[in-house]
Length: 191
Ligand code: FE
Image 1 (cartoon, helix red, strand yellow):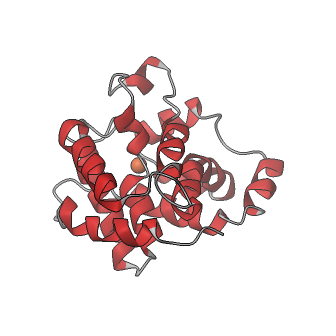
Image 2 (cartoon, protein in one colour; image 1 turned 90 degrees about the vertical axis):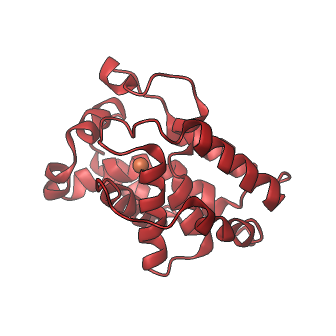
């Protein structure tokens, strides 16, 4: 179990991150980081996902809130590796059921592009641009390795919520609502 998993302290950290950084734009889309996070978490909750997966959905892009690079960094041809930053931050606070799907959510896009041409077409222009910076579409060998991961299904599920969570003006619960899942996710057993 991670060392720093005091739920109240984690809730405060998350509120602070979204208060200070959540109004920034979600790279190249017309919604904010906070709106994108809340929509992702709402879709997870609507599908009766586990507390760990709801927290993963809420915090899948926490890496974007942890660095000081410009919001339009992808336009400059630079990948911020937010999934790695996010995994490191989450792994100190939650079991791997939260941090691993977050680390894999970028690879999940590369996987789905390899498996489904319609998925590739459906990506927003910003997401297509970042795909190029994230090593592009997976090779067949890479897709086989990805499918072998015990977290494969969770990573794909998270990616589906992430891709849908770009709806301008969609009503969602507020951040407080999802904080009830933090303690539950902290207490989950690692496997
Ligand atoms: Fe996202």
